Length: 413
Image 1: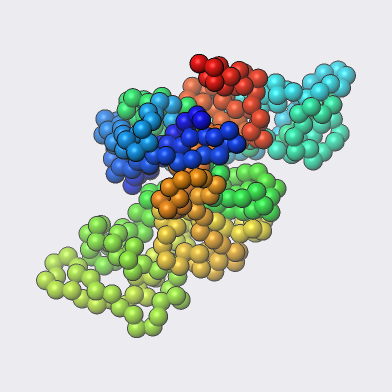
Image 2 (image 1 turned 135 degrees about the vertical axis):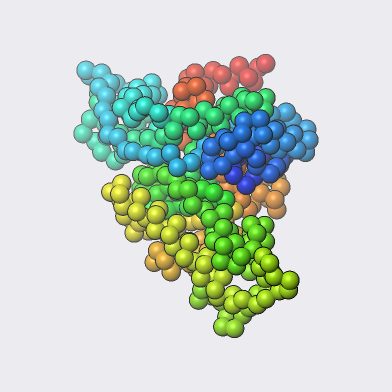
């Protein structure tokens, strides 16, 4: 079995997973590591040495549990500079019809990436869909079919170059060389969404400590991917200001007594708090706490909807509803809040499809880390590597000839 590793670099925590992939492609989790995140804020490195040390601490814990060494992990990138666009492109394969091969799809994706490049940004993902071969539309996978002209709709995801490269540098400074960089929203989606949801249309929201990543799927593929700089810590700060308590106390209040929807609080319920400057506890209505939380959640989701509409899409195309994951998805009443606010069905997404340590990993907090592992085994579309090098070429998990050759070499060494 071969080993894969992922490093989820967040503002609150660094999570590391080590897994072994069996002959069926199933991932067995054998190592988990976690460390308090330092030197990272809203997806950006603020102190390189401190960030590298936190990454190393989490990796060493996972290595100790698994007995395996991490060398080429899959890492996440995120932040307010994440954005996406959809391109339609066409290539001529041959004057007369021939079989479509991986290299033709590669050429199509290369063209779209070139069109999507802009100063200050790295294109990290190119996900093709809606293939057309000559005049035949609706093709899911054109390989080995006969044609002379190939077209596709291609979803491009990019991020600010500085943000992306500095995250990569923090990982290399810790002594590891990233195999690929994956945008957090797509990683989390791979961990918690199923194919039926993607086909029907679904909005994935990953709400962490300082960032809320999102991706809207339609007809099985992403149509908009983005990130806003408001999340769980914003809610904690609101509670801190309203109740006049420090950040640590506000976080504890949020986790233990916080409710996402005022209507879920029973009339007359109170909580005890000790504001700054007070010598004794005072009582405050629990509904007031819920109101503070609900107001901020409404703003976060409204901003996501605005981004979706600005890109020419509608949230009501998400027929399968809204799936929320990430650390803030554990907030009491978050499902009910989303259903009320969006008028769509909602659920809390937990990672699925793994073997081993399920009691630890089946938690919204590990969605991104699990999704990164799954990208390492079965990438979707082109994931551009750490140095602008494509590491996979199609959305069905079939590898290019070059990648098959690399795997063969690894097996015989």
